[in-house]
Length: 124
Length: 107
Image 1 (cartoon, rainbow over the protein chains, first blue to last red):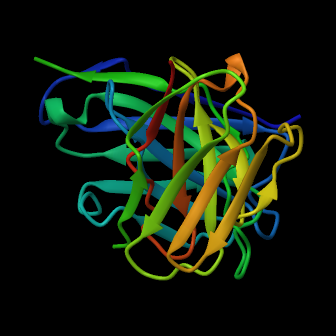
Image 2 (image 1 turned 180 degrees about the vertical axis):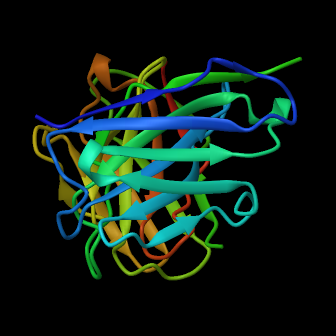
């Protein structure tokens, strides 16, 4: 059974760095073709793709946010960490991690399992 | 970046109606298009992957079609539980952008 769970602070101050952890079970990020994504959703707005990390440690970032994002993995601990620097109130959102088991070349890259999300509010 | 444009942004329909939602990427993405359903307060759920493949466990009233720059999600006969917001997402190239969503409401 595949599960993912996001954890981190619910409230951060402007200019602070946000660190979110995605802890998962039921699959391994050492398996070829596996990858984990981070997506966020401001209240009442659309989904926004942020970052992806692959089984082979390839990393991909949102164009508009790439200078502020870092994604990393701890394969033995089944965790993926996302850091977002210089947080601003506009970064207030529910942050989701999600998995794809089909991330190798030519594969669909669909997100078949999602965490429940964590609401992060940026306010002083 | 590939821009994903969904239409309509919102839609009112009745139980039993046939509904079609369109997604148009700003450049060709072959069949690298996925569809998700999201209900309020919940994480998105995968419906269709690679443009036309039904995810396991998803009712057969959902179907997807298209390739290149023109894709559709069709619900053949709306059920009460289908009223939700639907998103397309391209997995052709990074950044793996989402559409702006289509909110399906009860008429």
